[in-house]
Length: 121
Image (cartoon, rainbow, N blue to C red; front, side):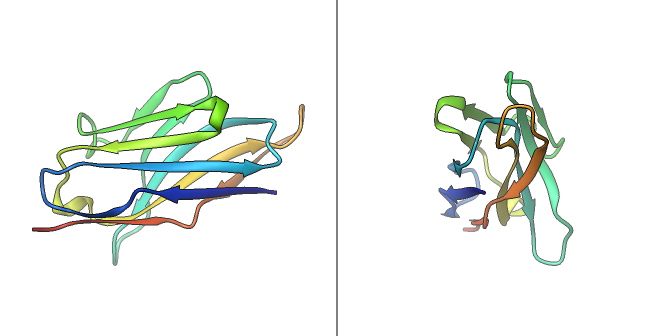
């Protein structure tokens, strides 16, 4: 089993910054893809950013130029730097990872519990 634990959410004013972290632990051989999703009240969950094992990244258009995803493979941790935050960024942010638990095994999808980000003056 694999656990993902997020941290770093909170309340911030418009234009402010936050850094989210998500640490994976448990039976891990390799984490192929890590990503951040968010879900605002009354809206569907949306993909914010992803990062592959080799470092390739992808972002939702709404966050390009403001958010940066990174990862530390040695620590099995993914980060999301949120800059120039806007009220519409308010949501629960959840970490996602596709994990191989053993060499040659399939990758399984795991989710964190989510962390609240609120952007308000």
